[in-house]
Image (cartoon, rainbow, N blue to C red; front, side, top):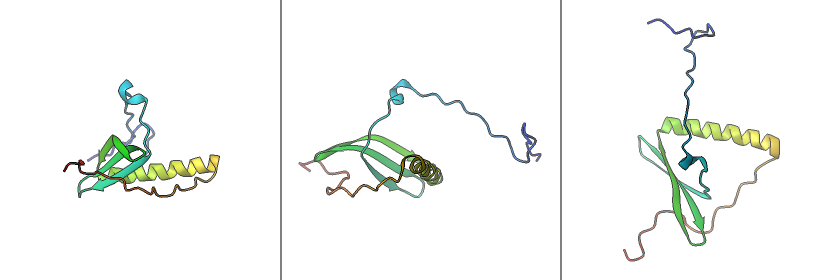
Length: 108
């Protein structure tokens, strides 16, 4: 099998450019102040929640593979390091005094 030398003449394949569309319904983003992570052997599930007072709701759910979750972690670590280099150390927030998670309905 022949190797694709790409435009740069290097040994590996040249990176592809993928054009990604940002739908208006997603462009504004959502605010989250809590996150829960669950996993199976094949998937990582990240539930992002907005918690106010004694209640909250899931505002976004991201399901991905464990290997992509590791790439997400690396990207976050890199960006936090760059942020701290520009703006100073981020002080870790204390753990919330309430338990956050899925709760059964009150009449269950």
